[in-house]
Image 1 (cartoon, rainbow, N blue to C red):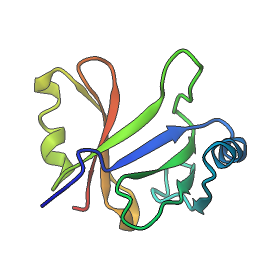
Image 2: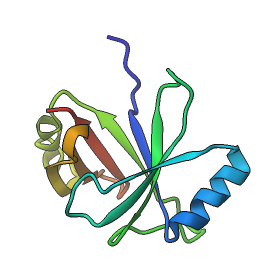
Image 3: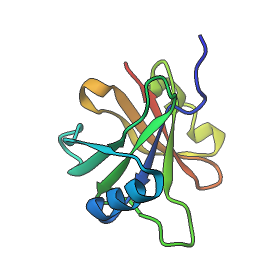
Image 4: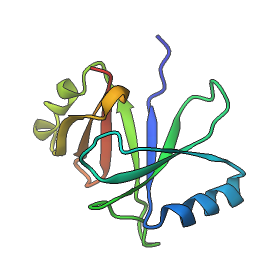
Length: 129
């Protein structure tokens, strides 16, 4: 199976409409708004439109508790595909990282875990089961 090493990205934003306007102007992309898939995170999502079979895609995310960019650091989340993200999640502490939010459902779109590596970088694990 040929699989991308990264399967998803998120760009955290403070103002969804302003961010969509920015990326639409700069990249010429359109967005598809989506309801909160977790039903508990109180988030807004806008998917980047992408041609068929482009590979990795992502979304703008407006959600309490995230840190949007302040110009001094990059605040983008990448997700790594897994068969079952709880397996990889179980290896994180022994490898020197931390699980910020243990595996949870994002509805029909699968499951994710939000983690931090040994260098303080946040990343996600994604699986359908």
